[in-house]
Image: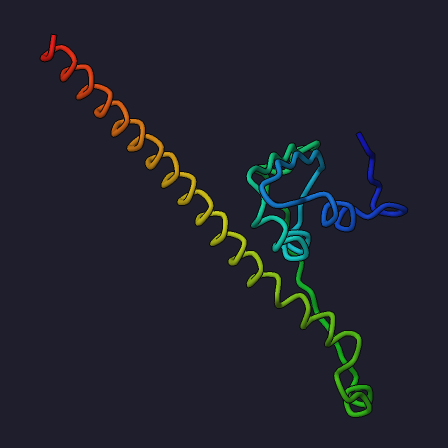
Length: 144
């Protein structure tokens, strides 16, 4: 087992090398952010199984008090900057969080749907196989 501290060893780098097509992955961590999902999306879509063990209480019922955030971007900085100031870039990056979360939710529902289809397909194949076996046995009984 390898311990990754995200300071000297970065989880994303290690996972992108280790996760191969059809592999099974188990991770124990306190959280898995939507940004991590976005970075590893192509590898995660190709694996067979992902087990994530939360090492600390991640889902709590108590609601934290919302704080009002205010930003002031001086006009002089806005006029000098071609692409935007560091504050504008930070705010722009935060706007993508909701879109990534929606995509992650959509992909999770697709995975569940596919798993259900596979399960149903396996059950159907088993029933067809058993029906075939039953026909063979009946045919043998008739010939005897």
